[in-house]
Length: 153
Image (cartoon, rainbow, N blue to C red; front, side):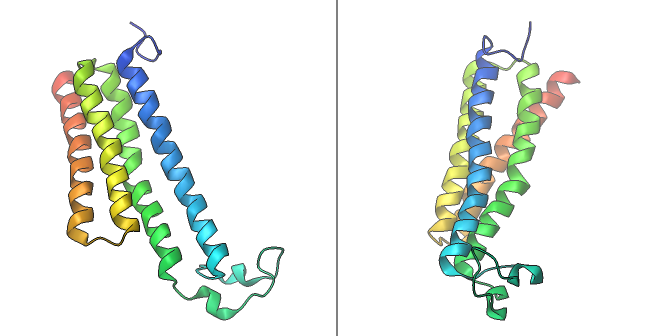
């Protein structure tokens, strides 16, 4: 069987959730840029203080931490620390031919966990709440990796 075709419903599920997570990662980066421009602050590198079409009035205080910008930057970093593991194990998970219902529960569950984590982060919920959503997503990735190992061994 060709695993990587849209005729395979498990791969189709993986393709859909992967596209959603790519959008999540990329749009979070754009959100950080938007917040930097809107607040005229939150820059991170000294060379960012050069005058340009967007930064017409560079000032040293633009390098100070701005929580509005930095919150988005932390969300982006968190995505980059967690989503690639899902992409990697998800692709291998497709190859071991799990039941469609299991793949959908796990993959859609991961997406929901990441979106809930982002919502908790942007609304400034406590670490415990964010960690709960992180934990759900993390356990899904760990389960998928264990399932692959169990199937291969």
